[in-house]
Amino acid sequence: MKRACLIAGLFVLALVWLGPLLDAWRESFSAHMLAHMGVVAIAAPLLAIGTQLGPTSDASRAFVLALPASLVEFIVVWSWHAPALRALAESSLFVTAIEQTTFLAAGLFLWLACLPRRDPVITGNAAGAFALLLTSIHMTLLGALLALAPRPLYGADEVSCFGIVLSAQHDQELGGVIMLLVGAAVYLAGGVTLLARMLATPPRKTV
Image (cartoon, rainbow, N blue to C red; front, side):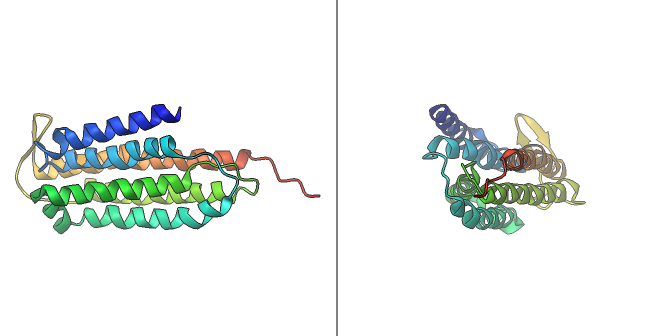
């Protein structure tokens, strides 16, 4: 299981980083969003599962790290979607590489901090669930802002993605929808899964 997840995660990374999303279609915001979601919402959890050493009974690690990891993810995601940084990433492959590396690092940090664990006092799973649900909320907010913005925030020219020519406004709207459908949904599913696991944990017996 872990080996398969690790291989799948590496395959997704290769598909995103070596394919046309960050090369031929680098000026398309929707292509950027597909790459972003591929890294943080698909590759990162797969790699986290594939590299996890094993479940732990130590709840303190998740309790201490999960919320800071969610905050780091928030800062990284919202910062790179500021128009100035987005334009910089579009204009330079070097900056794009930095952007993608920080996306992966933040995603791995969050998913590794939140992965299920054997926790007799359930605080670890509770912290992980809260962190993933919090991340889903800010992903939803950003996706909605991008999809509903009355004007394009990232350029004004037409762009091409998958051979389809889109206006800057439609390209941005599509990018916001991708974030809502992929990013927000994946983090929500992860948070709900951990929450269900926590609620299914039998109460601790007291002596």
